[in-house]
Image (tube, rainbow, N blue to C red; front, top):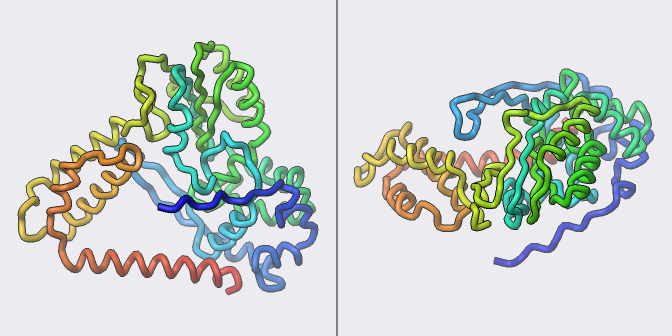
Length: 344
């Protein structure tokens, strides 16, 4: 496989939104028809749904934008994506994912992990507005319109294309202060949304670092999720954002995902060798295959026997064809929305 060229990035002063002072200019940047900003209030709509939390019986509520609003948010994300950001930021970055968060700490014998409590709920509208005003130097009316587009009910919604990046930008000063504290303690720092990870090859005082970070978070209206503040030593298995770092400093599939895969396979195992399966079973199998692939993204070749047996289960023809058609339809639909919906 060819290595893709690195994404060229530029200073925030080179962002197209920088010093955007008129609504006419903003309409052009967002690919809206003249006067389109006047209609923004009419197209701001969201819908809510719940998804399973990873390796848990609990549900997570997602607030997602309707399609036209989502297309405009994607345009804002596009304009911000090539801005230079700190290397320690993992979430919201192209060519980075949660696995990179685990990889960043493979050499860390001592690890401290801290989650921020109800982070999105407490990512309020004002810091988003101030980002556009102070960092992008937009006019107040432009900052207000951009804030209206990417916030909902006074905070950053969980399911928007812009959510991860804007949650960082709204509190970039806070996270920069935390990064400086990590350096003072001789630690490497990474951030994945609200998961903060600190590691070092040498011992450090986790209590001192935790207390300093607590003070910084509270200054900005946040606080740690205390029950999820964890410290690990050289002989410990270290769970880091959906991955695990072993005492031998290798990346491993977390125990929760392994158990999910084993349990899911036991449910469909009787179907191995049968002529066909039901539509409902087919959905279970597709979900299991996705979980196996997720595990293999962390550990190459993981679950060879389960993968082999799962692939032997014959899927209904209607299911496989409809899934392919559904993927093609969704893919083409997204392109159409991205190009056209903002000018409807």
